[in-house]
Length: 197
Ligand SMILES: [Zn+2]
Image 1 (tube, protein in one colour):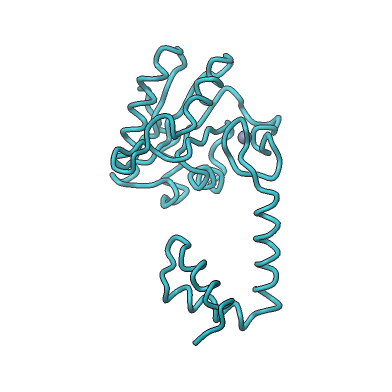
Image 2: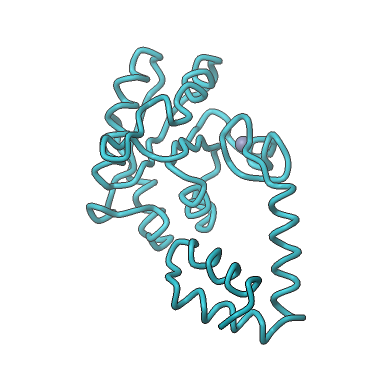
C-alpha cells in the first residue's frame, strides 16, 4: 500500500488526457526515481504555470502576458484572423510557422451532446473584434469533426452580416481530423488552399 501523497499523485496524474491509472502509476514511479532532475523541476514548473498563465483578453490564447505575445507582436498581420477551437490548435498552426496573422480561440466547439451552445464559446469576443473594422479575412479553422463543421457553419451564418470575407481550411485533412494531429505539411497545404465560404 502506498502513502497518501503517492496515492494522490497517482490519482491526479490519472486525470490527465491519455493517462489511465496504469500509466499514472508508471509516471509516478518514474518521477520518484528522478526526484532531482524531473520531479522537483516539474513541481516548480507547474506552480509557476498555475500562477502566471492567463487567457489573452483579445484572442483567448494562453500566455503569461495580456494581450498575449502573438496579439502584441507588431510583425503579425492583424487583418487576418484564424479561428480555432482550442489553444492546442493554435499551437499546431504555430509549430509549422505557416501563418503570419492573429488568432481567435473559441474554447471548444458547439456540441448538442455535451450541451455546449454559442454562449459557452468565445463568439461574442470574435464579433466584437470584427466590428472594430480592419479585419480583411477570417479563416475558420475548426476541426474537420462533426462538431467542428457545425461550429464553422454556425459562425458563417452569424458573421455573414458583418461583411468580412470568410474562408475555411481546405481540409486535405481527413474527415474527423483535428488540427493538432496533422503534420505541418498537410496543415500548410490546407491553409494555402483555403476556400471562400
Ligand atoms: Zn492574444
